[in-house]
Amino acid sequence: MPLIFCIYFLKRNKSKDLKVFYVYTILSSISVIVVLTFRYIFKSYHSFLLFERFFIVTEFALISHFFIYNFIQLKLKKITRFLIIPLLLFSLYDYMTSINLDFTYYPLVMECLLFLLIILFFFYEKMKYITKFPIYQSPAFWIAVAFLIFSTGNFFLFLFTKILQLSLHNKLLYNDIYGLFTIFKNILLCTAVVVAKNLKIKEDLSKIKLDLEPDLFKPSIK
Image (cartoon, rainbow, N blue to C red; front, side, top):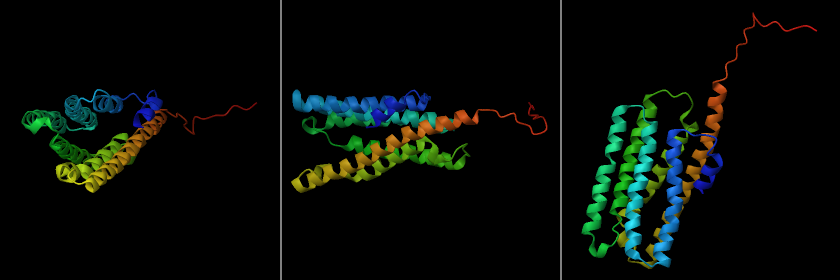
């Protein structure tokens, strides 16, 4: 769903951070097709799990890069760039040590923690510096809220997935909770794209110079 909004509003706003976000939405849409292909057509569970790990690292790299463009302090930009390294190393370690190459969901837990850290940096900086427009008129705000809700809502879900998968009732409950937070995230991401369009219009209007000085204004009389 966010991809449809991104395609529609792509020509409205071509800022660097939103270009990164557009790439993320394209990757997310492609990942759904790839996952379904590996899982149900080729029935290659190993390829499916390998791609899932690749997507987690790539998703984090893109979203963290989006926030790097929105940070003002150079220190926060450097810290955020560094965070991809522990996630990548942990994902490789988890893949190599997992029993029967099974997916442990711990890389997702770590991704949620790192997202929460970046979003904490983002809101801390927004409170510290004065912005031209209210924060809720920024697409970065809605993207931050989307991943904040998704990460906090699914953190314990991912952490205890192995236990939840043992029972059919808990498995259905897991799917419902995950689906609910995914829907919330997608709605907020769509809101970010719409807000980006409105913000672009306001920025264009603010650049218009009105040189109407009352003392110099002399209407012509016909």
